[in-house]
Each structure stands twice: as structure tokens, then as C-alpha cells.
Length: 193
Image (cartoon, rainbow, N blue to C red; front, side, top):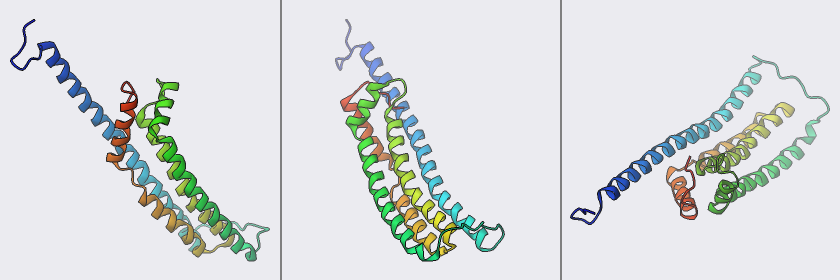
């Protein structure tokens, strides 16, 4: 077989170029997928502002909020403390679930169980979404307590921390790429998307 001056056959050279091109195409597709996740992250933040808009409309009496019977004003502190405690537990559970579900070993196990449906990006996105839902639900608690007690302060006590918690958990492309590379080390034939 004829060899080039650097010791690579023509076939090997073409194969390496094709692999480099495929890697670049996969990385570009992974970047586009990541952009969708960033858009979803922004939508979680917008939802909290939407709740604030609802409260603005109720405060200005543009839309009337129906009264909720059977809940006394003196129960307000009990509800606030209970839901604050639940919010802390929920925050910890969401972070734990994301860390557990986005671990390389767990992703490899998921891909092996159903290789046609599972991919690295889908596994990372699922874990991230669960964490964001847990964080955004804290603002929903504030909205629900506003509906019960008509107290805008209670809404702010829950929605501002929820917004800050969502802002703190930006889906970094570099961390996703590192996790994907770690999974590919464990399972080189895993699908990225």
C-alpha cells in the first residue's frame, strides 16, 4: 500500500477528516439543543413575572379575585412557615435530583436501557427541567398564598427567592459539554442528541 510522507494511508486520512467533520456537526447540534434549554430557562423566569402581572391586575381590580372561604387571617403565619419549609426541602430535592440524574453513570444506564429514546442531551435536559420546575413552584406557592390572604408581601417573599434561585442556575454550555464528554468516555457509542 502506498503511504504518504507522514505515514497515513489515503483511506485513514479521509476517515480522520470525516470524523472531525462529524464531531463538529454534533457539537453544533449540541449547541443548538443547549440554546433551546437556555430559552426554556428564560421562560421559567418570565413565568414569575407573569404571576406578578396577575397580582397587579387583581390589585388594581381590573379582574376580581374570587374570595376563598374557610381560611382565617390568623392562619397566615402557619401557611407561610409551612410553605417556606416546603420550599427549602423542594430546593434541596431539586438540586439532588439534578445531580443524581445528570451523573455520567446514570445517563449511561438510561441510554443502555433504551438507546433509541435516550441520549446524553435529553438526559441532561430532563434533569435540568426537574430542578427548574422545583424552583419555579416556590413562586407558585406565593401566588397561591396571595390568592388566599390577599397579601402582596407574602407573594414577594416567595417569588423573589424563586427568581434568584432560577437566575443562579443558568445552564452553562461548558458544564454540559464536560458532562457529555464524561459520558462519552464511559460509553463511546452513546448518542449525543
